Image 1 (cartoon, rainbow, N blue to C red):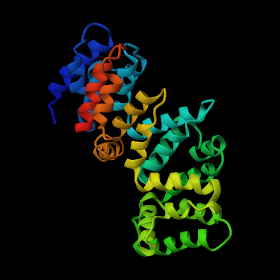
Image 2 (image 1 turned 120 degrees about the vertical axis):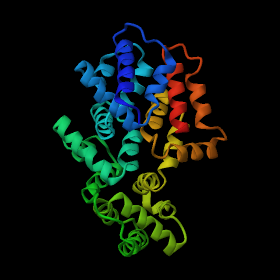
Image 3 (image 1 turned 120 degrees about the horizontal axis):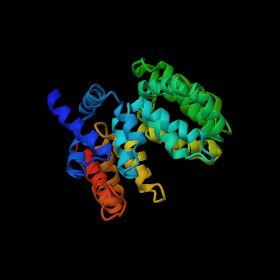
Image 4 (image 1 turned 30 degrees about the vertical axis):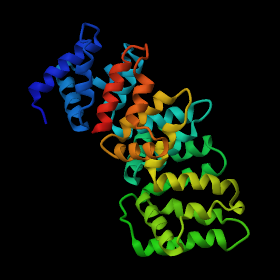
Length: 313
């Protein structure tokens, strides 16, 4: 960890950069915004003491470079506040980006989701579960609401004995009748936190020799089964879900790339990189270079350099 005097020097540079009075050295920005989260937090605190302003607000109001500005904003934001804000924008938009809603609700731990819900309620005076239920349709509506509800039990540790019982319940909910027992599955998902769900899925494979996600591919499971399969696989193997998100080519590719690398740095970005490489034969580093290097938008090369540093960890 650097000394406060060194943080002061970096804060002076950031003040100069965001006030438009110089500070155009890209490498200095790379050094600052590729630091670990605790150091960035200390920089934000030092900036507030020196200038009496919240660095996050300064970044948010600055429009010098939209690509860099977005990355910087995500980097210095509190993780749970950041996720609550992303969800809010999705849920009040005209059309919903369901993939990103699944990403945040199903790849975060139950403890993280618990605090995201608190931030969402505090900032927007609205209930996340209710807003998801109002905006999302089909099987995802009940499934995602159940996942959100389950984080009430975020403090509970995984129970192996209970996991085996729940695994049998899952099997019977699919195999015992002509159709899938949606009510039982939703009830189970709403009562078990993420760690417990992962334990259930592991127990299921040990008991029956195949993944639960394979069982619900049966035609009798219908659209609910297809929706459930996406959520289950996301909870079980988040790195594969992120890798798939990154492989989908659309107008938001750069936004998705920045969001995933920033939010998963210091967590599982190396696992995501391996999953992405296994499917594409190309690394995340190569994807970053393709998307940002040579782009005319100001700040793109700086963004690319920061992202590469975050991937390397």
